[in-house]
Image (cartoon, rainbow, N blue to C red; front, side, top):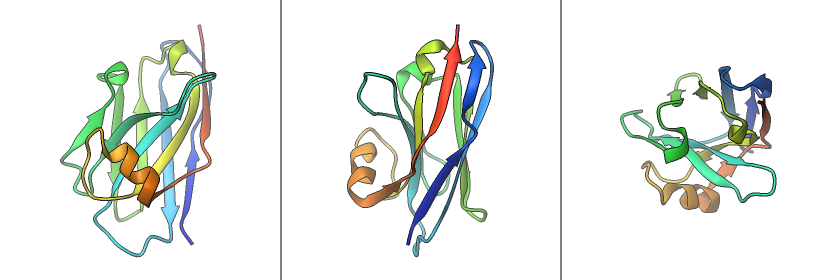
Length: 128
């Protein structure tokens, strides 16, 4: 059974930094991408960032470019999302996504929802 667990969310002030972590277990194969979604209050879930198995390819949605940094450690089966210069509009539940095919572009976010696994989410609240 695949388990995906996020951690690191919290209540912070605008301009602060936060590191979200994702740990997972139960995947019986390698060469999969990982990524993050978020769902803000009253809005649809959106793909935020993804990273391929090798880490060579990474993607960020325009609204977070330059502020978010995704990384992964395949040996430890972990992924992190470093968030700097937090804004109130970053307030959302952040979800870790694991699996799908090993590529990273806009279409991967749909691919992982069909073929991968999503965690339960961790709440990030940014006060102004």
